Amino acid sequence: MVENRPLITFLTHLVLVLGVLAIALPVWITFVASTHDQLRMNQAPLPLWPGDYFLANMKQTLFGSGLSGTETAPVWLMLLNSLAMALMISTGKIAISLLSAFAIVYFKFPFRMGFFWMIFITLMLPVEVRILPTFEVVANLGMLNSYWGLSIPLIASATATFMFRQVFLTVPDELLESARIDGAGPLRFFFDILLPLSRTNIAALFVILFIFGWNQYLWPLLITTDTSMTTIVMSIKQMLEAAEQSPQWNIIMTTALLAMIPPVFVVIAMQKLFVQGLTETDK
Amino acid sequence: MLKRVHFPTSALPYLLVAPQIAITLVFFIWPASQAMYQSFLIEDAFGLGTEFVWFENFEILWSDSHYLASFQRTAVFSLLVAGLSMGVALLLAGFAQRVVRGAMFYRTLLIWPYAVAPVLAGALWVFMFNPTLGIFPYFLEFAGITWNHYLNGTQAMALVILAAAWKQVAYNFLFYLAAMQSIPNSVIEAAAIDGAGPARRFWTIIFPLISPTTFFLLVINMVYAFFETFGIIHAVTQGGPGTSTTILVYKVFNDGFVGLDLGGSAAQSVVLMVLVIAMTVVQFRFVERKVAY
Image (cartoon, rainbow over all chains, first blue to last red; front, side, top):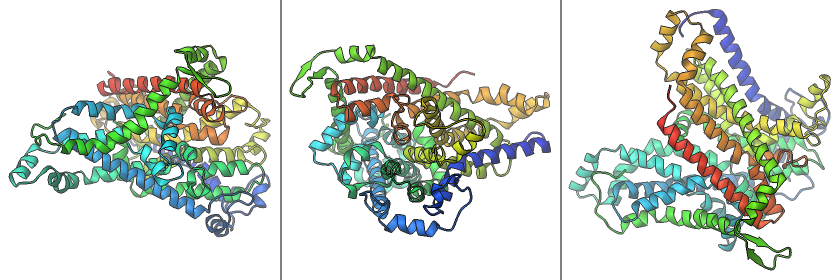
């Protein structure tokens, strides 16, 4: 700080605290809703202070029938589905991007740049703009209602490939020379030298991709019709629809809380990696 | 691009790129070319045959007042989302960078909404603004405003903008704070010695110096508002009431999956692809070069 003026310091903290509170308000209201019973949640004005039904709501949401009057999978299964999808997308993206970046940086082969541009194009085709034909491809391959269908169409990644390419380009050439003198082949060089060197980059990317995978919405919505394949994020929409008939806001908001806890926890617990991953992939 | 020292040519590099290329071909390039092909076809009313019509779908699109209105709506929506979330983020980052101890503490408390899925953000806001039960309509009633986003198109639009901007503040804040912290302290101290107060220093030194970040964030936020807000719209308004919140991405989905107008939906997809390509090119060309001070 340049000058020491108590009034400005006070104003600074005031604005920041107000900002933090305003940003947290929607989640606070969600949390409060998950701590009251259904009766209280149907009387206006809604409470702004927590009640004592949190554990009961959690239990009913996780292991009970969920919303009465709807045919949905139990919420613990949705959480597992989301976890499986997020892990498959993030590890899949990292694995295939590492391999293709390695090939593009360390080998000279015909069509190398052609492959590079083909990967680059994926950056320009978000799933939202090609939903119908991609859905048809997945349907024809018989991958509807499966973990493969949920994850594989999303794991091609130009950003991850670019990031690893950037990382590999900073690895000194001497490492490769000495490895080759010691008789290491390409795969051995990859596993024993490149992978350990890019460990933190992989971890940072994993944090970002886990959140990306967990938060997928449109794609799971299209390709899962079987309730046992529902992910937690897409179930919120079905519950909101059901709320028009039977407003069980305590259960809906408990589910919403459960859906946002894992990715938010990842951001807060691994903040350093998260920030690194975000700034590396988007630049 | 390529290492000076590299491995001899063999079949191995092809095997290494094979998974990525296979997925790209099957799930990206093939569907995108299908969308392009379908945008040249019109299916008859009974779905029995299709006719190759060249650009007729696009001509229909450009003369369709609903589509043009949706285009305009998307522009307004994305500019307001970008403006609101970047403005709030700039304000908070401007104050946070003044804090000597505790800047990281505030950062932790401000960046977590990044991890909330758009559809969840929509669910939280639709709950707060529920016309019969929500907290905000209850207080707005005292101010003489009757809130019902199921009936009032402007209110519905305001709600999706708020939800979309809320989620994006975290991302913008992170980048603004990083940009401000990378400004050398000596520049700011020199201005202070010359007698510039905090507000003046912000507008004449900090703000111009972070203009590359502002431009970068503007592009990123536009892309976000165009494509990633689908979940928010789907959860909060489903494009309604009427079509007052039907932005382009929602219209592609609605016309294709609900209305089953394959040719029209494909033509809209192609238009969106052109938009993404334009935005990506802008991002790469201008952001890489940095904005001149």
